[in-house]
Length: 165
Image 1 (cartoon, rainbow, N blue to C red):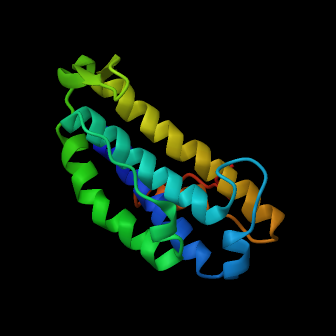
Image 2 (cartoon, rainbow, N blue to C red):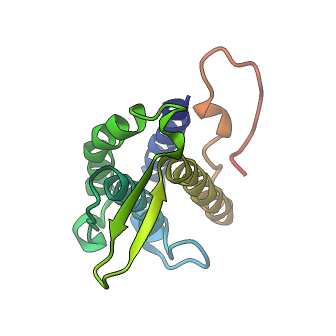
């Protein structure tokens, strides 16, 4: 079940990447209120946060990507595709039994935190949905239709929706 939630988010994310193809580059980079400050920075943030917390739980290590290295649409989409198998492998390992599994991770300042597997995964699902809502607001401000929420629904679902937010 957990992997299905991530797959829905990834499907929406891929649709946002396709949506970006119709938007002028200057608008993708333009400073915006709220979110992470621009459309591309928000997509980068979603990807980086996902891999960061998965890595923290699975390996107890930290890694942050630098936005400057992925500041164009093609590089950002490639990063998303490259990291997905790593994230998927960890998410697939989730089971109801592992839901409350705890890892203690050390911070550079010497403090430690407990990470709960299921809590991290649920938070990541919500985090991406939150930022997809921000992208929806910005798309409408630009006069573009947002990615429809229905694009993420499994085939054959008869529900009808016009937008993600």
